[in-house]
Length: 376
Image 1 (cartoon, one colour):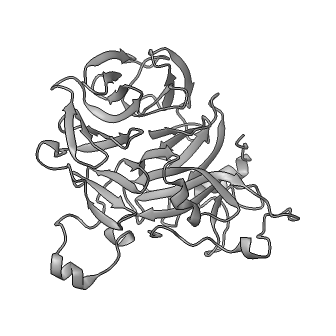
Image 2 (cartoon, one colour):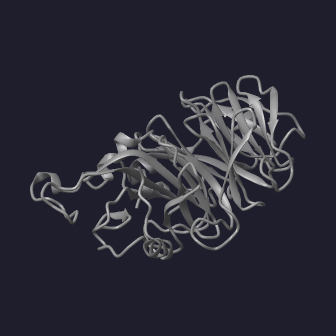
Image 3 (cartoon, helix red, strand yellow):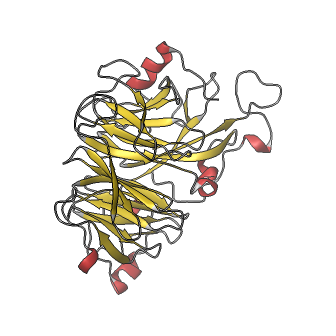
């Protein structure tokens, strides 16, 4: 079970990187000598963060004429198990960091009938199918695991989508215009039901912006207008409210992205605090990380988040050898030197005979060698 971090340490983490660390030390949350559970691993912003440099080949074959850096991204998803797909509404584009091929490119299907007009957020199904919430077309655009466009869901005036989540045969669409969650058949796009109604009471929604589905199938919705996250059953029954307006740890000022871990912890991005808060199922604050600044691990107007087990094996080599990763936490900053921030959550193993968490002597204490471009 995740620990509850002391209030004084929480304030330190919010203000900076979560503790005093050496420049060459891993950035851990909470910092040693506490038992860390989370580590900042790397970040991606430009083509140079992922691509191999080959000036001669660039000259011979040329490159696709797209922006070589993210403009103002919002959402990101990992599709099995080596591509990070990013919405960039600042450039009206959807781009791919292909870590296996070491390529930075436009999403292949983002052309013709699959061209996105205002891509806000996205998610991916178990098979890698991509579902994109496009607030310009007022539709959900669907792309296959090969990135090719399949079809669009939704008709004019049905919803103004800002996020989408998939669970089984259903899609949950954040409809910021009608202050509701539209539930669609993920294959046909037929509307099955609505969750919530405009308002401020429990079970009502006001300016819902992001959502996620937990391992139990419950739906978690962040409301920027009500300064909270609500949890619903799939049938729309309200279960719990997490957070309230305020400027103290555990409260919310501008909640955006929300993600749920396999063990049920709720991750909430706050664009005002520029951090991510982690809550348990009862809404109790466990930890937060990030905070404003330009150093690794800091966030600059963060928006979307994805909590996923995809890519764990690939990113394990970037983690401290004492941290066995369980899942990744991908947080998108809209500005700053690091836009796509990758954190890893896992189990910390104290070296035998040590009570301080310092590396044990021997081969196991050496840092892992990156299996993917470091990005940062």
